[in-house]
Image (cartoon, rainbow, N blue to C red; front, top):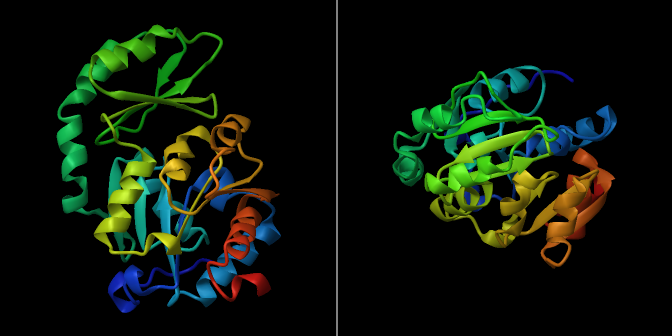
Length: 262
């Protein structure tokens, strides 16, 4: 895949005027599927940048996203990162937090980072991730060793916990996750809710798929996620894996007139 070049947001129509906005998780979703399927989706997005908006909604941090896009993945125009605790615009190759949208997140977190790290020092089944996030603390999870009292610790501190892919344990500000942050972003940008597609594949995408926007659980999704969203009529459960599942949903929901020929 050849590297793409970020185009400043101000050089494109605002998201509120785009025909369609893709708000997608990365691992297993936008980055999932075959090389050919990913290239097909990425080429289609690049060919329709004036009518298609791209927002990454991911557990990944801004540094990872910049490296990823320098490696050939289409640059997003906005990022909802760190499991919803970062809301930022892409300015050149810089991912700059939007203060107005992060104010509530920062207030909900306060100075919790040090308290969380102290409370979980040595907790069975958790290994602190080396990256220091601004408004979350994240651990690698070893399910066989994990002691469930960790969930109670988080709740006693007035925070939220999230286990995803049975591999990660995140401690987050109360009420903050991908779904609420995406809804806040969509409202702030004045994007028509029926013109957004939220795409994901694991339990840390559940709040995003459940938040009421058109959504897709791509093929290959975590079974726990599929079970959780099975009753929701606005969520399409795709047969195609990863990137191909995103295109499948865009066609199924008739979100862009050119997607069928992609």
